[in-house]
Length: 337
Image (tube, rainbow, N blue to C red; front, side, top):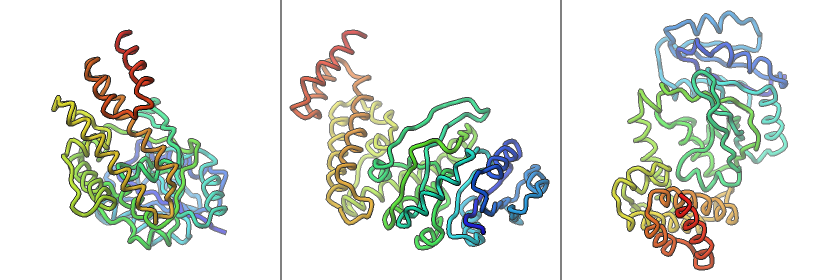
């Protein structure tokens, strides 16, 4: 009995398509349909898919290039199962990925979607990193950006339909995850179940970078206003800092702006803590995630400050009971360097 739909859009993906398909077709969990939609490819992608004879494959071709969002929504409508696993045509799913994610969702019927850690590689497969993000910190950090790798996700069709599926053309996954997280529980499995290929030529990095940056900016501001009020606004450099792009704030060379930015983050954290009605709300986890983010931002800026500026920053931003400890650490590092 088919229990899961693996949804994979394809567009000019001939270089890595076979490896991606093989990683799905060799899963230890076998009760799935493999729904592949070619979005008007002009290379040999369609021929590669058609060369497979596995009966689990359902192949569709868009007559013209519709784009990712319409293609994904088409796939959700075509899916015959309640559970849908996302897959991209240049990534590699580990053999037990689907088994572990289906097992988790079956054991946790109140969870709408589950993701996993990913091993990030370059276009040619060279290792880049593994982000060891803790699932309990996702709720807080989803305010600022998405830690969730889109092709690691398995979600419930009904929950996705409740929020009108994918609704924007850029940063479509972040928007979906945010909307789902307003109504439903979600979880990130603490193990690597997919190799994620980070291409320097991908849409969000080159071809449509301006569009994706604008979408992220609008989503971030909307998220902050959800907690802090409709009229809440911040300088663009502060918003970029919250997304861990520190260059705009550093370029201003104003220590007061850095201090103000961190204090705004504290204010936002307080607003998130005060909005308790979300099903994913966990005050202890929010506080811990906020501390990690705050410490990360401060530590980045201190690397670019003089010893006296570091001391002043610490006095302004570090709780009194931690000041001596922090000063010793930063002064030691400064003198040593």
